[in-house]
Image (cartoon, rainbow over all chains, first blue to last red; front, side):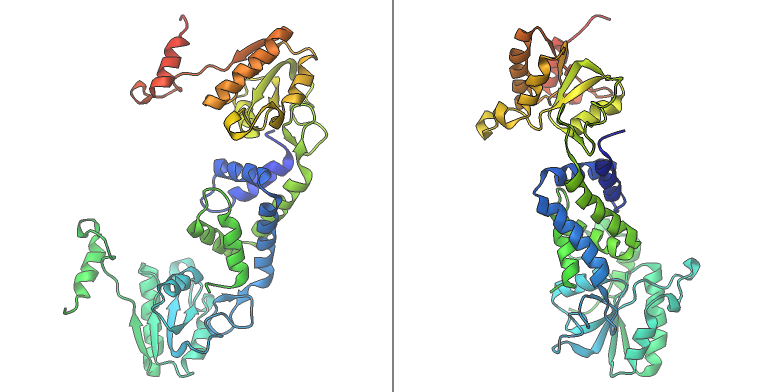
Length: 197
Length: 197
């Protein structure tokens, strides 16, 4: 019987979010209670808005609230180069580098046969439809996990026969990292991927 | 130009909460996007509900969505003992111990003259009104900060002349703590507050 029902309800709703436990949820609830009313209202409206207005871009499966996403609707982006990512946060991470001027394709997952995720469960069909449309290079930027690597291999077998150059983002020691703390697999990759200076 | 507008809007709304930075806000947003629609809807409704339905209990200034709060409406609670706390989370912390059967009074702050917080800025008036109503003991459970101590002293000067026994919660070394890591003030308090075994 701690506090009023609407308080417990909000604590519960907050604690369903990842990384937010009961204590943090309680702290957030009392913050919202004490803060300007706009804080609660803006958050509530943004939550409702997100689910009602955002959908997948029909070309690349990025999230958007318009007909096409920001990237696909930009005429300056190079449609001959398609970078395949697992998720929208991955896409955003690449966009933040400012170093990529092609377009994307978001799979919304990776192949994981043991968990029942095959090509049909991913947005692979939309990708295949695009491949015949003047794509010259497919950069596979899935995560460097086992599933990410398997997905890269799958995409390579899919696109290479169509005359598309399939590449994989480099993996190695992160910038600024100490070799001493790099794991063996990363270090082995960094060695294998060495290049002349 | 990262992502759709409703996404950026929700990231922004989340990042206004305490302890939630841009990265966490982004992670929460994509979680909400991928999760069951009920997660977003429940959180949104709980937020709106909180601000519209919750108000202060007219007796003790605890938060409630009914006429009186859970504690004040419970006939089993001892109205002769009033525990003064700074905030509702403080009240909840004491409730969780299950060791207190009196009632509360929530000040919603502490005296801080340098920040312009005097007795008029706190819910002191409601407390004074209660003191003449059969209160025998006033337990001051404000935090053990300078302001909390000053508020305790103020309450003591206010209630003692009315024949009320004013007490302060004990301060000392927390249970399970190592003396080596206790700060000097806490340790000095623990020594001064020693009792026979």
